[in-house]
Image 1 (tube, rainbow, N blue to C red):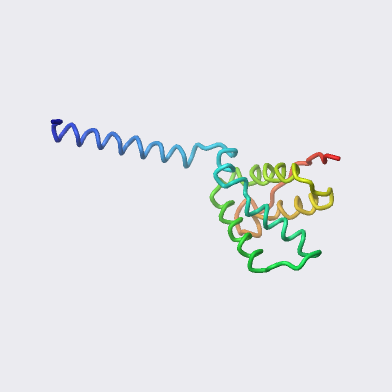
Image 2: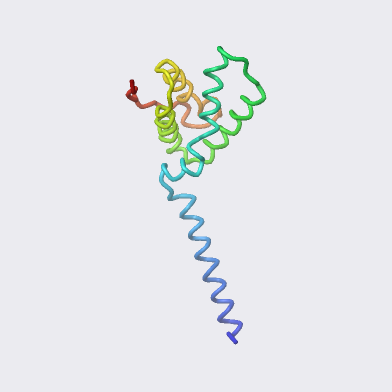
Amino acid sequence: MAKPSAVAALLVALLLIAHATAYRRESGESCSEQLQQQQILNHCQMHLRQQCQSGRFDSNTSDESQHFQLCCHQLKQMDRGCRCDGLNMMMRELMREELGQQEIQEMMQMAQNLPNQCNMKPRRCEMEMLSFRY
């Protein structure tokens, strides 16, 4: 049977490794990894879609508010320096869908202001000019 001091030393070593791994995850993930963890900002995508459609269709304000709050939560979970990159990557994902140029432009304008609406920094994101597929 292992000595208690050896078992204790092993447990301390495992705790130190776990702590170091958790710290590396919090501070060392790439923006792409953070975006994947936040499911490509799926709630921000849903919020933008609903905002674009609200002028054309009846919208459920409680759903809109829920997606907006969850969007803000997803953005908050990302490093400040990754938020704009994440929003640009999210817009690239939306571009793969069958959306019209006007709808994409509206979403881009709204997306660049999402950090401000969520009361976080940076306040505004510059959106990359994305080419439209036609």
